[in-house]
Image 1: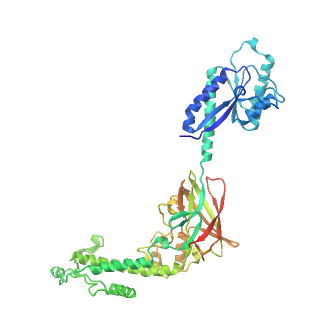
Image 2 (image 1 turned 60 degrees about the horizontal axis):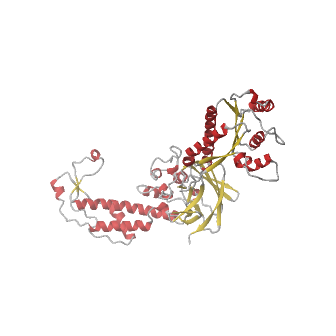
Image 3 (image 1 turned 180 degrees about the vertical axis):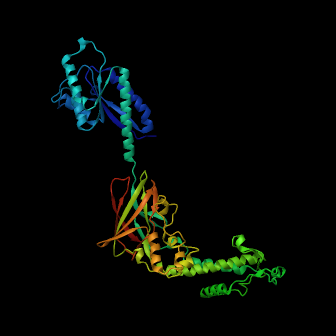
Length: 500
């Protein structure tokens, strides 16, 4: 299988008296490539005038070498012993010119001076003096190392090349890893690239039609339970037992509801036969429950009737919810990270035309008492929060611990029962659910939302839908995304579309 390899070009620059070191460098580079080419996807290619240049006319020899080799290299190794080299037009030697070119381009230079012993008769004093001056020039820059043996040079070059090129590889790897944050939306549970404007779905909860069907199904279940009429034998055998009956209030409540639904109840609908409550049982010692004795079918019927009453109360409260919010429309926005690393402290700012934006503090006030009737089944949070799916997680799941705490520690509705300022509490509760900062700027509404953390290749829902005043086509919402691990500000637009 083909692999992508990052190849770095390494210039070897030295006068003609450096021979053993060139072979050492080639051996070290070959070992480096064998070790890291397959595992890390990086390799080094050595370049030297003797093997990498080719005949070319029109320029001087050093200029040709510069153009063909030096300027394309990523790093250079320069070595000096007894000879400095042949002067060029601008510098004392070709090696010096190559070093200066690399330094000007900000490239890495590995410079070494050989201190191996040499016979004095083989030393050219002029050449060696140039080396000493050159060495003194770079002494304060800390650009060179000295060695006395080939083995010492091999250890130095191996350590320096490995450290430098593996660090480059790590930097390149980190540069290639970045988040990619995008604004998206939802249509029929699928993630889309435009903003789908739809009727509010009440958090996916059961609509009144579904609740009515559920009530009808339970009514049929109760009607099918047939109980033989014994003369309260259980009560006779236990004088402390008390006959269990459905209260008149419950009967009237269910009867009025079924009449409204145009459902006729069977004459035996509320009959529980010989069902009794054990007079010896102490409810508080038994967890507050009631011990019922009698026909098992009668017990089943009793509990189903109580459940029916709850469903009807919930349905009646739900009618008020649909009446209040049923005409609302909006967009379920999502934050997607298509990048290959996570991100944190993500802030999104939407700029929405003021004329089409519907803020939660402009909602109608839900009929007083509705929330108290719903509290056993639903809360305002259940109604408005965008629920998680297999495609994306919900907003609260993305929050770091202790950073987003719902101020309401009780089920929604409890505070409404004896509250003297219902409307104020109602909007306070909405504020805790619609976790946005909202500002008016000229003809725009700036809506801001914060995400603590988002993993790579993941999607998070906004806290709630963003509601609009009317169905609009061919309009765009501009947005801005800033985050901790992506250096640039992401600016974009997302198109509003209306379901056909």
